[in-house]
Amino acid sequence: MRLDKYLSDMGEGTRSQLKKMIKDGRVTVDGITEKDPGAHVSADSVIFIGDRKIAYEDNVYLMMNKPAGVLSAARDPRQETVLDLIEEPKRKDLFPAGRLDIDTTGLLLITNDGKLAHYLLSPAHHVDKSYKALIEGKVTEDDVSAFAKGFKYDEDLVSMPAELEILEYSSDMAAGNSESQQRSKNSDDVNGSYDEDEKAADTEAYGQLFTTVLVTIREGKFHQIKKMFHARGKEVLKLQRVSFGTLKLDDKLKEGEYRRLTSEEIKELMVLIKKMSYSDRA
Image 1 (cartoon, one colour):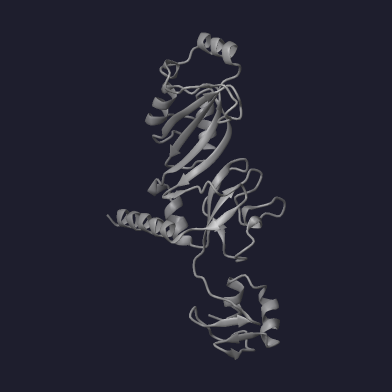
Image 2 (image 1 turned 45 degrees about the horizontal axis):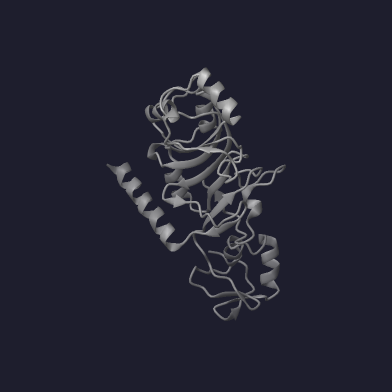
């Protein structure tokens, strides 16, 4: 590839900036000053800008804990995007693999590997995506059964079977807060339907009830989880993606932080992609 493209791919500047830098003699290739921006180089070339080595990286894989209020997009003229949060590497070919709603937080894969993104996002492959959600209202075993069977949740949309697990009840919107009143999900009140008399009794005893759940879906239609709960008479207040395929959100990452995937995480992703490619050929 051209020397200026190599440096541009690595986020070292615009092509015009890089051409001037190269012509000014600030770049060496394999120990020799190179002043031709179009000089041929490869990923194995040893390239320096001044005393700083610029190693070529073909594919980049970053895990981000996406914060609320930031778009899952490469760029937007009006709003902050997840790529605006990336400080290094400053590559122009990075993009988020899939989208999270602007108010949804959690696991987002940012990469430049289009093939991997295609396999992970293709509706034909049904890659698992798990979300922790805070629900306004009481989720019951009837809801769990409905999610497991799949149901019509919009005028034209029917969900595939999904897994719904009730984690806890709370009278505090900050579910999981140790100071909140919580009710065990193993108690009898989880089973069966939840009629208005029971709802009134619970509300009088505990105040407004909230349910923390874990939902796993194998598709990703627009606002799907929110629409599914809405169709069941409940509202999603908070939504956080905690896993995507083989990836699990690193709980050490604060919202807005990111890190490179480990070699083991990349290996597991590649094994998953390999299985899907075999399935496509079957």
